[in-house]
Image (cartoon, rainbow, N blue to C red; front, side, top):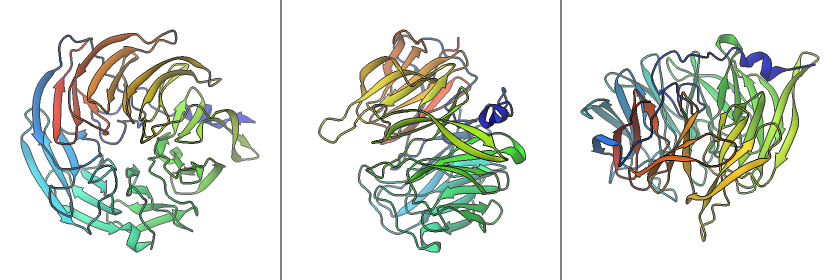
Amino acid sequence: MRSFLVSVAVLISAEFLRADWPQFLGPKRDSTTKETVAPWTGAPKLLWKKPVGHAHASPVFADGLVYAFYQPDGENADALAAYDAKTGELKWGKGYEREAYTPPFGKGPRGTPAIADGKVFTLGSTGILAAWDAKTGKILWKVETLKQFQTKNLFFGVSTSPTVVGDTVVVMVGGKGRGIVGFDVANGNVKWKTTDDAASYSTPLVYGEGDRQKLVFLTGANLVGLDAKGTKEWSLGFKDLLNESSTAPVLADGLLIGSSVTAGSVALKLVEKDGKIAPEKVWSKPKLTCYFSTPVAVGKYLFMINGAATLTNPTVTLRCVEIATGEVKWEKEKVGRYHAALIRTGDDKLLMLDDNGYLSLFESSEKEYKELARSKVCGVTWAHPALVNGVVYLRDEKNLIALELPAK
């Protein structure tokens, strides 16, 4: 018997292939960057600010362009726009009409675009998966996934972010035989479909390289592991009682961490037995509840945004948790209402953008919370920021914003 995660972890490159932020949670989908950030005084320098439509989708960056996916004001449509990263100049903006849909807690798409091989892939809140030419905005193909697979929408709308693995773009759809579906990046044709799981709001973890890439999904009922061809390798029951699972699974110090709103967090070791992969539970902590902020690992510790996030008393807590045991080392209460996004810098500091619009920089110490800088930078936001070439790109309810951060 051996730990499967340890054997594949060596396949994850220590150096990112390029200084882009092409998908949800960054180049390796783990909220990390090689870039370093020095503490700032006052407020970070505003480079530009551009009005943009409704969305909780995060900005992404590739080849000098920043992309925003949104619902234009007053329209039943999804739109994608590309901006010059240095100046904020609009390079193009295109869209398509869709059926009317107004979910609770904000209009517009929730899922963040993914950029690969000159294409931008988007998944709107009504389940329309689309491929766009990254340079011109031309729509190359569209698939109405909910209609094609006769699946009902989620209460808050489709929210998973598309995930590109080789020549396949993967999304959760939900339902018998169609829980997770892989589409051909060239034309949108179905390449494979697997599991009977209901969809969740979560986005998968991807790790490994080439043919040995793996995906881990937090579905509406389970943590599920697939290989790059869509073959289901393992599953473990992990169901949120509110059906609102939203965080991405995390690979941390040889363990796989799953977190949810009501079920708390669980740590798994994936072991190989008789040629098959099996999940073994290392610890389970009901207190470590996560709404839609994905935890970030730094060394032997996990930094998490936990909280009940109730409608009557919304508040979340930042916690430092020992990965091996799930033991809480320290906590800082009231860091946001429902959400705060975390990014680990190249020198193991942590940037935090909370949903009240404050950007903070703090040490990744296991002893105490040590804040290095904090400023109000935007309005209310649930979108995750992107950090590229010393600039943090973020969006609030009204604007797409570029802020220059001091380099260390």
